[in-house]
Structure formats: C-alpha cells, structure tokens
Length: 180
Length: 325
Image (tube, rainbow over all chains, first blue to last red; front, side, top):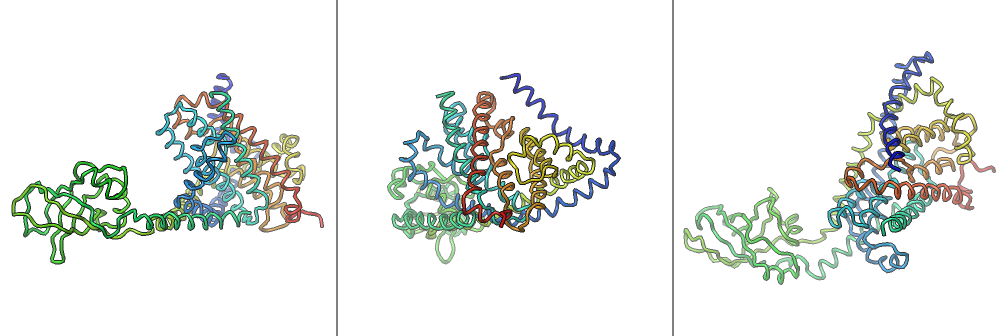
C-alpha cells in the first residue's frame, strides 16, 4: 500500500511539469507555431472567467445566506432522530450538507472538528474522508455550466446530489469498518 | 431543479433568520432597554470635569448570568472609559475586548465609530474627585433586534464580492491552460488522446462522435483530477464543456454528455488526497488514503449510474436538446 502511494505521489509531482513542458515541446516537434497558438488559446481565459461570474455570484450568495441564517443548526436538530436510525452521527450532518454547497465552508468544519475532537477521533476521520472524497457540487455546476452559458441544468443537480449523499454515507461506513 | 433549490436556499435563509430573531425578541435575549449592572473603578482617579475618564468595568459573574440568563462568564475587569458630555454619560469598552455573549453580539450593534461597545450610563452618582474605588451603575445599550436577518444580508453581499474575486482570480490559470490546450490541439495531441481513451469513455458518452476532440479534453480533465491538479482540471473541464457545447443544438440546455461530465467531476476521483486535507490532518492522512479512495470510487459509480438513469426519466428525456423528434 505504501509503495503504491509513494509511486502515485511521486507521479503527481511530475504530471504538472510534464504538461507544462511537453505540450510546447511536442508542438515544436510537430512544427506548430507554438507561441502564436498559445496566445490565441490563452485569449479565452478572460472571457471564460467573466462568463462564469453571474453563475458564481448567484450560487455563492444564496449559499452564504443559507449558512448565515442558522438553518443548518435547525436542520441538524430536526434530522437527528432520522439519522440515528441509519447509524449516521448527528455531529457530521452539517459537514454532509455543507460539502455539496461550499468548499471553504466544509474545510472550516473539518478544522472546527479537529479542534473539538482531536485528529485521531473517529468523527474527524469521517469528516476528513467526506471532505477528501467529493467535490463541491454547486461550485462545479456554476463554473462548468457557467463557462458555456448553460442555464437549464436538467438532471445535473439531482445526479450530483445523489452521488454526494451516497458518498457521505459510504464515508461513514468505510471509516467505521476500518477504525470502528 | 436548480431554480427550486436556489429559491429554496434564499427563502429558507430568510425564514430561519426571522425565526431566530423572533425567538430573540420573545425571550428578550439582549435585555433591550434594561440597564446591565456594572461597577466602575477609576485607576487614575475620578475627575468630574474631564470629558474622558479611564475606567475599569467590572461585572460580577453571578449577576451577569442572572441578568442575561446565560452561562457565559465575563472577565474580572474590562478597560474602557467614561465619556461625560452635556447630554449625559456614556460608557465605552475598549475596542478588541474579548466580551462574553450576548455582549459580543450587542457590541456589533451598539458601538461607537471606533468599534467600541458603548452604552448610556444610568444610576451613577458621581463620586468625589480623585476617588478610585468602584462605584455601582447600570449601562443601557442600544436595542439589538434582527441580528440574524442583518447577518444573512451581510453574508449575501460579502459572498457576491467573493464570487467575483474567485472568477477574476481564475483568469491567469485559465489563460495558461487554455493556451497550452490550443497548442495540444494544433499539434494533434488531443486527437491522439481521443483514440487512446475512446474504448473507456465512449460507453459513458455515447452521444459524442467517435473522433471528436471532446473525448480528448474529457480525458485530460479526468487525468488532471486523478492526480489532484485542481488548477489544471478546471480549465480542461471548461474546455471539454465548450467542446460538448459545439455538439449541443440548444443554447442554454445541458445535454446528457454534459450532465455525465459534471457528475463525474463532482465525484472527483483522485488518487492523491487534497493538499488542504494533508495540511490539516498531518500524518493521520496515511490511514485515510484507503477509505478516501474507496469512498470516491463508490461515489463515482453512484454518480455515473444516477446521471445515466435519471437521463432516462420521461421528464428529463423530454428536455433533452438532442432528443429525436
């Protein structure tokens, strides 16, 4: 397991430099006017960034208001008995909800829980696995769909949320199986 | 769906904020208009003629607890000063003092221009000049109402700014990787990749023609995610979306391929844990690699299945821009 991990982390050191260097080099070899191509492609960077602004503002401002309103605490209290039945610790509910909504918010929750329970507690392990095993669905939707001006997202949100919910429950189970 | 979730978030935040504020008012959590008992000591002696007299503000733990009905305990003394004007006396706590709740919240409303908690002093009989001993008094703060509602509005404004900052911050990295991608396209790297990944990705994206560059972009996006290169993964993913959009007959409606790409990205299959988690958890991370990997893989399977199956529901089939009429 450790050697696999070492190889992977070693590889990940090289992938980024490899992409940065090999693309222009290979382009040169293929007689592509690399500088001109690069500049032509890079020109889109600004437009894309500007295009996603309305989508990001819409998503982030609504989520920020929701988090500031204390709705999460009320929800945690309301769902407590239901969660007990499926063996999901109530302390992790805020994490499970925030994970799909806000990346910085869920990172802050991990920090809070480390301060409260300590790094080697099983709750923190579960929270860390939750954080590490999924992406912020709403951020991804805003950026990826915003970049191409897609407003009617069809089943993207339900699919993403179902996957998130599954990942949250699976995270609790695997950690409990390994450390419980 | 997103319409309802978005509106739901906003409505929920207003409803819950109002609920919390209503319960604050019902229990009179901030004891609006009632004087908080304090004792004032004068380390430099009391001077009846001075406009500004330095004081030490003392609050007795038990008195404080019964007054606000809280279990928070104040420190033994807070530095501050007395402001004596024609209109009366004002008590100000030095800015940056670590106040217990609910005083800390009150301090966000009842405050001076320099962010000091301030209140009107009542029931204070001025001691003799030069007196240093503590004298009893009461402080009435400006009434505090609708704290949550204001916090919600402030958070909304704050994050609108943050959102634009995030987008603007992306410009450089986006430009860099989109430039590299253009070279890759012109040099035929993307096309070579398409051939390589076609057997794996085609079953997931059956709508993409077999030789389309979108497959290559998706492959780059997934590789970057796999190695935890968020910086590169986002531009690659955006480029993949743009390629998918060229195949989309509609301007504003997502195709099944787009939803699939998004679902795969939200599940975020990565072999190396996020850098931030490494920083937070330290050596503990070693024991978590395996559960994280298991969870992501299973999450990815759920994401792919959900995207595929939901796309077959009659409602989503009818909204498919590529449906055959």
